[in-house]
Amino acid sequence: MRKNLKITPEGTKDYLFEECIVSDDICVKIKNCFTQRGYAKVDTPCIEFYDLFTLEDSGYTQESMFKTTDNKGRLMVMRPDSTLPIARMAATRLKNYEMPLRLFYAQSVYRNNPTLLGRSNEVMQMGIELIGATGKRADLEILTTAVDVLSATVEDFRIEIGHAGFFDALIEKMDIDEDTSESIRLSIESKNYSSLNTILDKLPESAEAVAIRKLPRLFGGEEVIEKAFKLCNGTKAENSLKYVKELYRSLQKLGLSDKLTIDLGIVQKTSYYSGIVFNAFVTGIGDAVISGGRYDKLMENFDFPNGAAGFAINIDEVVKLNLKGKYRDKGIVPEVLVCAKDGYEIEAITKTKELVKQGIKAVFSTFSTYEEAKKYAEKTGVKEIINIGE
Amino acid sequence: MSPLRIALTKGRLEKDTIKLFQKIGYDCDAVINKGRRLILPIGNGEIEVVLAKAADVITYVENGVCDLGVVGKDTILENGHSFYELLDLGFGKCKFALAAKKGSDFYGGYKAITIATKYPNVTRAFFEEKNMDVRVIKIEGSVELGPLIGLSDAIVDIVETGSTLKENGLEVIEDVCPISARLIANVASLKLRKKEIEDLVDLIGKEINP
Image 1 (tube, rainbow over the protein chains, first blue to last red):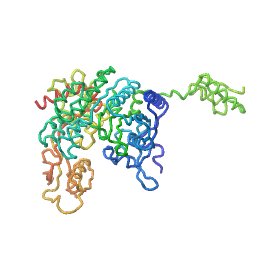
Image 2 (cartoon, one colour):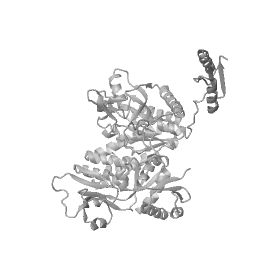
Image 3 (cartoon, rainbow over the protein chains, first blue to last red):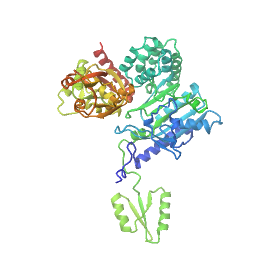
Image 4 (tube, one colour):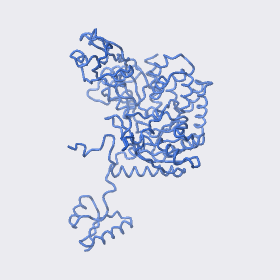
């Protein structure tokens, strides 16, 4: 028995009518934000070699990826992320191009989430990658593009900025093994104060340990930076702080005021991030809609040492927010139905095209009799029927 | 502005949390006289309490339909963690423990070990850390039966006083980890409603660790 014949796989769904219209509309708006800033579209294959996503620090566990094999038995995955494929592509096919490269994408990513949690396994994302540019200007370019995208698609949002270098500098000075630093990172990521304290209690007391203890709470406005300065006096972490402060000040000129916050506790699972990291949140969506940052070391994996930064936006969540219960049938019922008597089909089709050209939503009737067409029109609310050949 | 929505684990954790809310000055009469209602206002309506089963508290918070939640560490360890864990509330204290028949040589020999438990993820993680390959069988209730009727060599379960174990001739071999109630928050809520949540967390924090 084919018991799965009529259902879609868990975590996936069909998209109908209004959902497609809203989705297309949002994609166009975002695409405009990207192209106006000089980004060019690229597509990468849906299936990539497993090796690409098992690079150190890629942050994807074996079980979170959909896998298959090619005809040589090599392991393949459905891309869980677009940044790594684009980094691969830039490092190979675009390596002789003048830097920086401004690339954007609009494609789905696939993640094999645990079942029955209501999470999507297929997520439509759009995003940009700015490759071969580093420093304040490049970071501001990425961040302001994210602001553009959010302003164009949602009513209210918050962007939070952190810096991967802040945590890294503190941890480096603490001289602890990798497992401990990973559990510290996890506790900070989940703002788990109690487990963080349990881990740190076992370690010798130091200025860095005191700073790390406070890390999950270091989020908010500019006052966060001042608090953090006091905690990391004289360490390398100061440089990251100064930099975040500079960016924050610059971004204030956009008049974002309370939309922009600092969170020094952002320590992404995808630890290829090396500089700024940022997330965006929108009321009504329970998770970050945008996440991104700077990943200067990642490209070395492809023998193409170039700084790069980017972000991705979860299109499905933004679409859901813009739909808000609008699941109507708009778009499928025509205004005019053009019927044809036997032998007048081509004339009717030509007539339909003429009407459409005039801006009327006309459709050529596929019913063989006028009576059937009339019945359909009554049921669906088609306003007018024309019978060609009368 | 919509009220801050907090999911409470029905039963003892709910009662302890309500006591805590009363101590920090919230009017909780609606929850105390709740009848069969599941969504109740507290204070002057600035907080809304949702009553749910433990694992559902996590589901509601993870999906962002509740901003905050109170749930035991046992449920957190068993059911994933894409939320923020803000406070150890100090009540609902107990522990996860590995227990077997009194006098059995659990770690001895080379026999492949079978564990019965309601918490397969916690059990797996515990033995993975010890590099031990064990077979885990999920049981829905009265896990103590496992070793007694020969289904498993030992159990991993929540132990409070240890009297159930004792009465059934079992004993704790090793503690797995301590458990207590935690305050959790949705990732986006903490950012979008930072002030409200932080004020509440500070109030609770001062009450439990003066």
